[in-house]
Image (cartoon, rainbow, N blue to C red; front, side):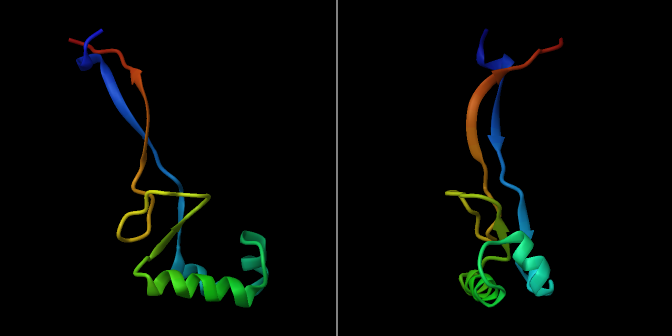
Length: 83
């Protein structure tokens, strides 16, 4: 099969809006993150200071300028090409 029948796929991490997350009560922050609410808030503020508006879930080594996952290429998968 030639390249016309293949699609490049990207995996994207889900993300949270940092500013919105900072409005959450301590109880909710403790449900979302490990650590104490004050430390969690300090971490989130530090991410904002880096210029990030979003925080991806999990480890992401490819963040865009806004902090969202910019995608991770995965194996090409064959797709059906219809004439």
